[in-house]
Length: 180
Image 1: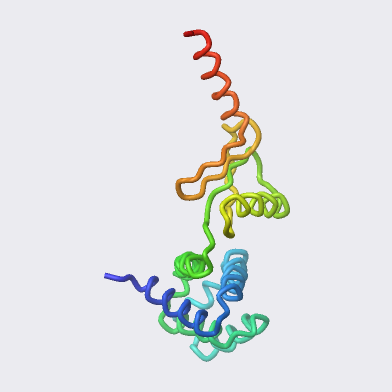
Image 2: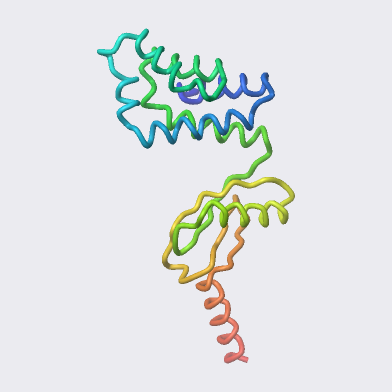
């Protein structure tokens, strides 16, 4: 059976499609998610059973006015009314997945020995997108075992430019030469 998160995500993605604003909704969800993440007291306020709905709605109006999306604002109000704002992160993840499918964007992981800047990530995304022929979004994960360089994994595609991989390749080549 479809979960509540999936139903809510499908509904808001349907609205985004109808409005022809899928990219805008991706940005709005990411922005609102970072607000909730950086200020957990906001989520606690919006989840509270002790705060009247009208007060929450007024707060949501103020919080979301920069997005200029009445449907998104109403969506957040609905989550507040149903006391599901604590599930926003799950909804956002599902919305992002559905919007990426709609926009033909592949998600993947970018492994590096240290956190990369947005500029560095964007450059790598562009290079990979050029090779694959469509847009990609990469999430940077730190993996100190790589020694240096980067490794990108998108579905079954692996682009490994790490020093660890190069050393392993060199080792295998030397073993082959020794056995011959």
